[in-house]
Length: 331
Image (cartoon, rainbow, N blue to C red; front, side):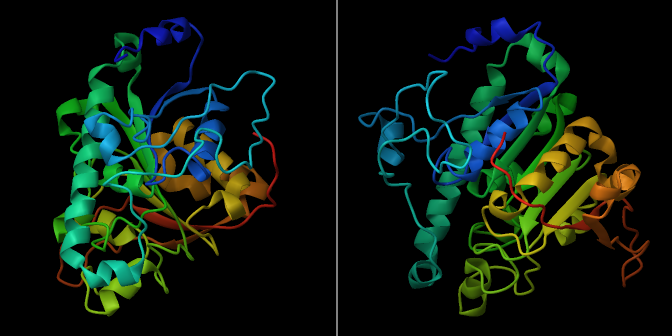
C-alpha cells in the first residue's frame, strides 16, 4: 500500500511533469480538487497525499479522518463545481479544527501547538511521498504546490536535501508571513532553498490571510501573535530572504477559494508556471503577445536595488495583480 507501482503505466505517456500537492485543512475537496483537476488537464501527473484517508482505528486516523466515497467510474457525475467528490462524512479527529479569530485569541498557545503539529505531520507526508517516487519521475524533477494549510507546509518545507530535484513551488491561499498559522516568526519564512522558483497566489480579500479583516489580521491586532504589519502576501518575505526567482499574484477581490472568481485566470497562470518556471517573474512580458492575457495583469511593485539601509536586493521577486475572468464550468 506504500508503493507507486501503478505509475509504471504512465512512464511512456509523455507526461509534462509531476506535481506533489498538499491539500488544505479540510482535505482534497473544494478548490483543492478543482486545482488538481485543472493541472492534470495540462498533462501533469498530480500526486496528493490525503491526510483524511487513514483508517479511523489507526493512530493517523485518530488525528484526522473522513469516510471515503467509492472510486468514481467514467459514467459518474463528477461536476467540476461540486464541492466534495471524495468524502461522505464530516471531518473528525484531534487535528481537526476551524480557524476562528475568537478561538485563537482565547487560547493562543493551544493553537500554536496544534498548528505546529499539523505542519510536522504534513511535512512528513511530503518526505514520505518523495522518498518513494519511481526513478523515472525523479529523473524529470518535480514541482511542489499547496493550498492554505498545504501551502503553509510547502512554504516551510525543508527541501534542501533534494538538491535540484525540486523544479518549482507554488503557494496558494497563504500569505507567507508570521501570522496565527505560523507559531514563531521563523515559521513564516521559506524553509527550503531560495533558488527554487516560487509562485505565491492569494486573493486581496482572503478571509484567513488577507490584509483586511482576516483571521490573521484580527488575531494580530487584538493581543494575539503575528507580524504587526501584515501585507496579505509573500512579496515582503521573498524580498527579505533574497529569493532568486519569485512572483506574487494578488488576485483582485479574490477570496480564500480563488477558483470562485479567478478560475480562468489560474489556468493560464499555472500553464505559464509549468512551461516557463524560471521566467515566471516576467509573467507580464510572457503574456504581452496575447492581448487578452496582457490585459489581466498589472505589474505593481518590484524591489528597489537597495533598501533604506543600503543593503542590496535581488531584482527577481515581483508582484502582479490578477484580474477576474468570467467563470466557466469546464475542466
